[in-house]
Length: 135
Image (cartoon, rainbow, N blue to C red; front, top):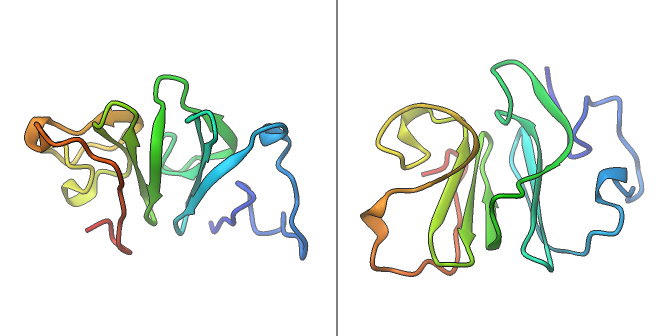
């Protein structure tokens, strides 16, 4: 199944910008999208995301879901996973963990943001970015 930036199936398309009801009242400062997922960062450092790889295999998070446990200054998205630079300078990843792309020293997939290990310490991360395959 294929998905678009509406957080739903391809039949939910629009030729003009359309407000997502779940994000009404949210002021976005950053938006990132991968092949199967999207993420929004608000001016209050709150994160909403939706798409594939955010729920159990084969399912889709069709409406934006807030990640209330994490506040960030930057977000990035690849075809199957996401990164966030947290306010405290740490990095979080979630989504498809194939090939170790989440940076968690395993290939487990994560539905929720998980702090990337201490290999970055004592650095404070201010920005995150990804390539097509999260490399």
